[in-house]
Image (cartoon, rainbow, N blue to C red; front, side):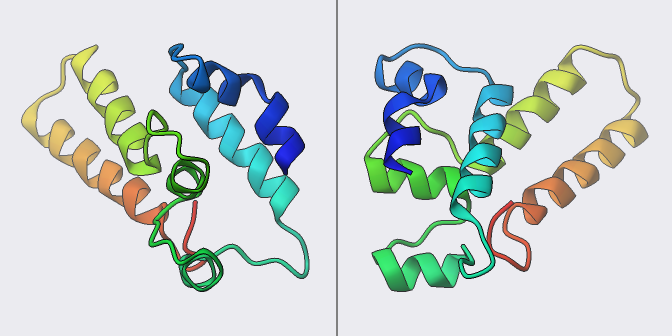
Length: 118
């Protein structure tokens, strides 16, 4: 894991104060989940709290706390920002916007689903 933290371009960009896209953040989270996960490892909110004494609700927030990278947003922030951008770029009526907000809520809640992380 330390190798990923030291060499991953998205983490390097964040540390250098460079802008990263939400897609880069989601890809980073996916890579870390693959590398950190396994048959004997289960990353959940309760396991993280027990092992690190951190209360987090996503892998991104866990990384932000663990490595003290303040610029790393929560998964819910990434979802919220992308829905806001999507809605702002198009014209929807109030029913459509209400549906999109409900869908956004589902994605945000899925971030802390049964496993504790996205």
